[in-house]
Length: 338
Image (cartoon, rainbow, N blue to C red; front, side, top):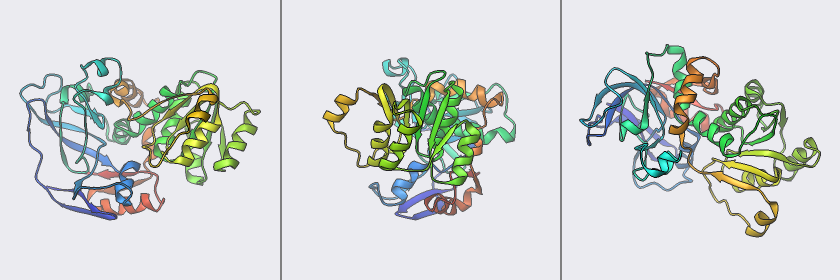
């Protein structure tokens, strides 16, 4: 089959690879209904993350089961399923505590920018729908697999409460999903930090009440002005750079929480300033599996429409253009039709 392979910085190819097969009795094979490009895929694409040779790309997925291993009990061929980018057994002590992204058997999904994909730990990872969803829901169900689940985790980790003031640092797809999540959790004020008009408009549609265009010291000053020098009750850090983390910390009030989900690159924290700031921090790879049933229900009932975050829709064969568009910020997030 043809699939996406990253050979090096800005060298994405749609080329022949072996079709996936059942390798363990806990595996499943799915036929992708759609896949997409993640902002985290841009780190190796830009040469900012080391690679050990060519890499199969893609970790966000939904589709129809075509084959299962002999030990798979909870999904069967013909079912539509959504799974997390973190593969888990959903039974270990960490999974039972709600942190499936730290499962003792954890693997990270790869190779999903393809027509078919192998899903290890299928019973613990995949959640089926009762019936086949309509085509127009596919983008939103795909978003649940990572970008919505990650934004939701950022809001959950930041302990967003009804009526609270929330700051979202980052206007990429995850940040926009963080805005959506904060609104669903009842936040009274949601301040989105964004410099791009299209992203600002979507943030407002998803529930942002204020837009701050400045960054760094100027951005923090604006947050302080908007909150009467108090700071935010909850901050969602959705970028992963030193600047974004410092913005998040300095925008937070004492006693608040920061939910950080941007994969860190070059982030260093000063223990002394963190100590006296009196803020809490929780983050890391999102335990999307914890939220999958709830988020899938919200999508299927049309209570939310996270699929709008896909502003570029391409056939999988044009995947290289999808990477270029996101790299050049011509697209927020690229949907790939299989």
